[in-house]
Length: 322
Ligand code: FA5
Image (cartoon, rainbow, N blue to C red; front, side, top):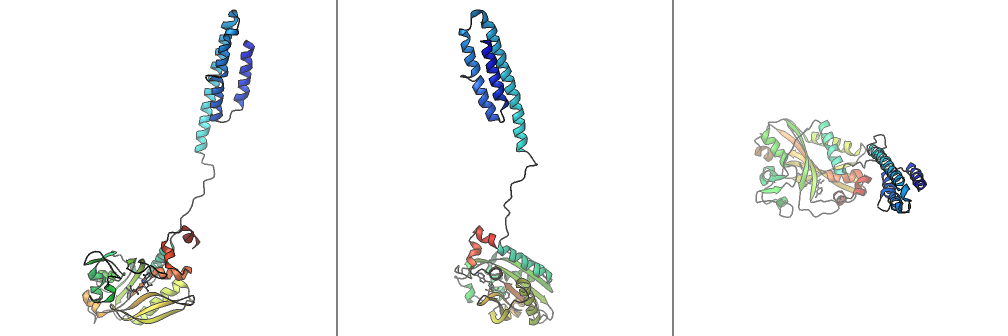
C-alpha cells in the first residue's frame, strides 16, 4: 500500500509540472485534496491495510498530503505574482485609441477667427440671450420691422429673446468703448426658421465691426474679398449684391459660387448714422463698416455639402468623412 502512495506522488508530480495557470492549479488541488480527491481516497483505503502497517501507511499519506499542500501553495504564489505583473506590463503594445475629430462647423469658426486676427480684428464676446433693445432697437430695427415677427424671433419674455443675429455685439462693444475699434465676434444665433437644406433654427454667425475716421466702402469690399479668398482660395468667384439692413447704409450681401448657382454667405454695409447715435458716437466724426458671416453656409461650400441639416444630425460617419 505504501507503494500506492508513491504512485500517487509520481502522478501528482507529472501533472503538477504541466500547470501554467491559477485555474489549472485549482483544478489540480481539487483532484488531489478535495473531498473526492486522491488523498481522501487513499485514507479511505486504510481499512484494507494490515493493522501492523496502518501507522506507516497513515504517515506516508499525511506526508504526501503536506507535500502536495506546500507545492500548491508555493505554485499559487508564483502564478499570482506572474498574472499580476502581466496586468501591468508596460512593454505590451497599447490598444489603439479612437481619436475624435473636430466638427466641420467648429473648424470653420476657428478658421474665421484666425483670418480675422490676421486682419487686425480683436475677438470680443456677447450673450446669446439678449435684450430686445440690443437685438433690434439700437440697431435701428423699429417695432414694425418684419424681422421682429413672432415667426423669426424666439422671445423669452416681452423684452428678452434668443438673439437672431450677432449684430447686438456691435452695440454692446461701442457702448463700452471709445472709437477707433476693430472687433470680431463668433457665436450662435437662433431663429424660428424652418429646418430646410440651407436654413437651421440655431446656427452660427460671426460679426465684424470697424469704426474709425474715413472708413470707406472700398475698405469693406477689400476686407470681405480677403476673407473669402482666405476661406475658399484665390480663384473663388464672389458676387456683391445691393441689399438692405436697417443698421447699415449702403448695404450689400455676398454670394459665393456654389455648384450651378450662388449661395449667400454674409450681409454687410456701412454703419448707419442712427446706430452711431444710439451708442453716443458722433456720426459726423466717425465712419465704419460691419459684416455678419454665415459659417454654416461657408462650411457647406467648403466641404461640398448640399444640406445644412447634415451638420446637426450627429452622424459620426458624416463627421469622419470630412
Ligand atoms: C444678418 O443677420 C445681419 N445681422 C448681417 C449683417 C451684419 C449685416 C452686419 C450688416 C452688417 P442675415 O439675416 O442675412 O443678416 O444673415 C447673415 C448670414 O447668416 C446669411 O448670409 C447666411 O449666411 C446666414 N444665415 C441666415 N439665416 C440662416 C439660417 N437659418 N441657417 C443658416 N445660416 C443662416
